[in-house]
Length: 164
Image (cartoon, rainbow, N blue to C red; front, top):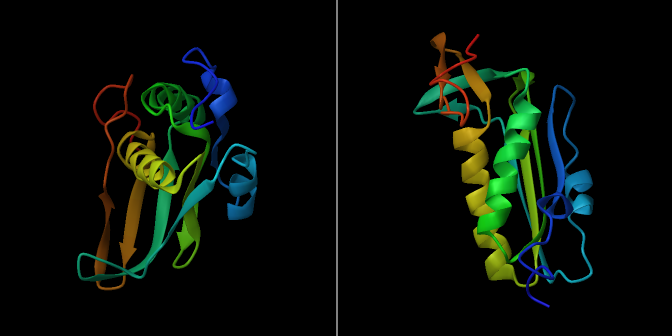
């Protein structure tokens, strides 16, 4: 079977995990969350803190999260599921707090019957998380003052609401 059993399949059965936490992320937990006997593919993206951005040396990141970040992101995932009938299961985790270079900041995992659908859905899901999750990133640089980058517009919140 390539798809969920029917169009009325509850989004909660597809969204297996949505987590916004200050604890370290464990990739294998999200991969396990999307395991499904119908799946021929599981695609997982792991976003880590890199040591540079736009030609500047990055020393650390600080992520700030809206107090309702997990619920707001879960609401967006419900809408996402409706546009991705080939997705059997998905899981998302985003970290907040102080992170060092090399730390895992975000993990998204998707299962589908076939690899093309899983890759496509994983890319779309990551884009949703990066642009709409109520999590904001401040980069610290080795060569000068830090700055806020990649600020998302969050559905249901006033523009740029909740910034620290």
